[in-house]
Amino acid sequence: MEWTTACHDWKTRIVAGQSLIPFSPLFESEASEALNVFGSLRMVDAPGMPTMAEVSRPWVTDFVSSIFGAYDPESGRRLIQEFMMLISKKNGKSTDAAAIMLTALILNWRQSGEFIILAPTVEIANNSFYPARDMVRADEDLSALLQVQDHIRTITHRTTGATLKVVAADSETVGGKKAIGILVDELWLFGKRANAENMLREACGGLASRPEGFVIYLTTQSDAPPAGVFRQKLQYARDVRDGKIDDNKFLPVLYEFPNEMRDEKQYLNPENFYITNPNLGASVDVEFLNREFEKAKSAGEESLRGFLAKHLNVEIGLNLQSDRWAGADFWEAEQDKNLTSLDDLINRSEVIVCGIDGGGLDDLLGLAFIGREKETRKWLVWVHAWAHRIALERRKEIAPALLDFEKQGDLTIVTNPGDDISDVSDMICYVRDTGLLAADKFLGVDSAGIGDIINELTSDGRGFGIDQMVAVPQGWKLNGAIKTTERKVAGGELVHAGQPIMAWCVGNARVEDRGNAILITKQASGKAKIDPLMAVFNAVSLMNMNPTSGKSVYEDRGLRFV
Image (tube, rainbow, N blue to C red; front, side):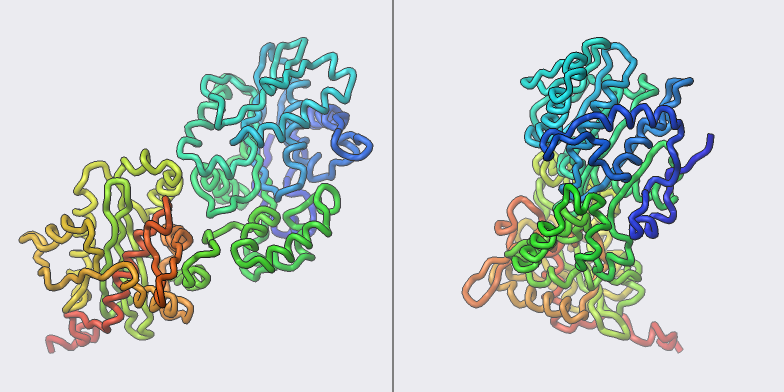
């Protein structure tokens, strides 16, 4: 039997309101039996207590059919074992989750089998358990077949002894489970947990001995830039859908705008809201959604982005807050797609300056390079950062993001103190050897906690002079560099490499008014990190002095030694 879970024409399908599942159920009889059970369950909180068959639209029944229709009754093996659905808020996700898992419990043949709905919090766990409980109690036959235990959020099949348990990850352990089926609800919230990947691995461990097993990930888009296990699974799902990864055991169903529509901001047109809301007009009220959209627009950029993420699945690139740095509004638009590495910056620049900030054991060490482009004189920005491994333990709330940046190549995690200082010095010496470093002052630093780096750079092995480095005044005195940066970004005169770590830092930056000046400080930004951005400001202070390099312009023209 051959099939593919890639959906190459998904952009056409989603705009036309067609199914995003590119094949019929692999085993029609299994799908039909499951739909009969699923369809007979009652939605208690809807007027008239209709059955799921009466209220479910084709996108729901197609998804249910693909899950249960992937089971081969002859071999006892499920041919598709992982499923992921990205769906906007209020499209009946929790009710569907309850009905799917209740169906799995009823159809299960394995004695004492385990089924789990894994939720990130107790409240979300209850959102899935209550509909399942009420579906049982609304049917006399199910009440006789299944025992409901509210206090432990468990439903037990009286004949097989199998259980459906709704587990809240913030209060209960998931280790040691031998589950046949796991439904992970609101995966985006797990992306904010440092230990989420290990937690899911523990929860899914039972599938190794359960060939009929499955895992379902249900989620809305994140209210912050995707991170951790959520970002990992979402990108994998997109790659499978687009045919970049061949994995016919993973079925992605992603309700999101095609890139072309997203780039043109067509999601701002209410006529397109149906694209990520297949239940629009049913569980999603049209008037409510339009009113919330108008309220979000009136409340400002921060509120609008939250609406777009949760109700339209528009991925957030920058986490903009009301007290954000003014340059954040223009940052995303000024990515230069031809600037992807330090070597790109070197090749395009006539002079380069550096900035450094941070470096405590539980802090980031940020290094920024700014090059002035030869022809346009635009400022080109590229950064790198370092973190000690201890920061992953002390800063658990940002650990998933840091690990993502490491995978993307923008962050180095070091174990031994001093390794980061050596790396920074190596990188600066690499640029020096091109002859492009500013001839006079090339390095701007926050003098606090930077002594070890200064000592390394001025050592005999490195050969820099202390007079080539500038202690850039911080606090309100950095106001000039901050203002210059935001003006350059807004005017398209400063462009950057589009590095996710910089988008994160820019989104983290918080502004404080201080007299006629503004401050961006680590204290104002709280637990979030901004060190690479502060390194950029330090470098801007030097580039603002219109430096020249020690390299003759004639070298580029091949005339110097004529």
